[in-house]
Image (cartoon, rainbow, N blue to C red; front, side, top):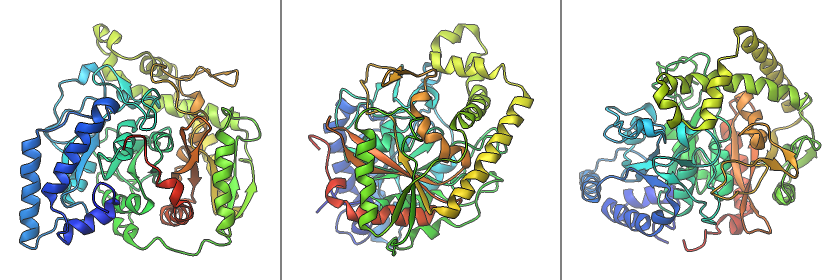
Length: 476
């Protein structure tokens, strides 16, 4: 098999053994983009092809001298359009940022560049990264890799589709409310939300309170996800709450004995979470794979009222999201250029008090303690990666699920908040396909800072489901 059929890890090995040149990899990548990106609109702000080919030649010259920059040497990469890459626009999907060109790299870009990648452009994202549907007024909508009439999810929708359509070998993303997990599930790839602090984000205005969002890796295999995490992870002095463990820990073999591991199935939380028809049955079918691996699965609840958790979540989200929108609201003439969902977050945040935030923090702390109790009984918790199937690309967000009205623009994805609020590692693995032919993901939530053990279990699941996982989108 040759690129782009092989995994990113196999590609790295092929480049370093000179079975394929960096120029050849770049040319194949550009051909894939020419073929698929006009319809899917996953990649934006693309660099000039001649410039990219010259950079690939430079990587080949380094190898000829016996020099390698690292695992990503010569790999084409496109960074999410929320991250700074020197010389590229960082639009955030906002018309107000359409022409902003970053003068320096963010930490994510600098670490991936230091490992040898060649940045070819950006991956599309919703405006300001808000909402799990990748569309904006700057570049338009990104379309699902499996059905161009459906959403790609978000906010890492461009990254997920570019991976599924073999336009990238791996991709970076970020996750606040499922932004790595939801598009991964809807495009039939893997997306890891690392433990909070595992992948530090620099620069950031606040390094102390804003501890819900995190950057992380996406890939077509668990090994690829682990290897990209090894590049992204590691403590940074500008991020005082970052985890000290060296990222190289994630390059270790993933094979291990998983027999006897205990998996708690959260499902729909005893009917609390509305689910579209087929979501639960698809995820339950995927869950059976763990039985064949010798794991023990058991239905469980959170042990805490989910309504109380949601109310605390709303306070935290508004407290952290509102200030992000504030700079765009300073001039009245800009208000109409900010999408309604972002304006709502801003307006809600203006009503919050410090007492409300501290009260929500107490609930969050109680929830974390409750999760610790669950992990005395279970090694991993499982829950669907989404409550609905990919919806029409022309729809802003689902207004109801099975007749139950959604009271916010993000209520329909409530199932992703538990890992986020507790700061736990969580990976979305492909669960399979519904009767509609669309993909769904299954979330596996790991113990505190148990990222590697979670990757090992996901790898075992992957090996047990290779035929399903290797299915490709139509025309790819």
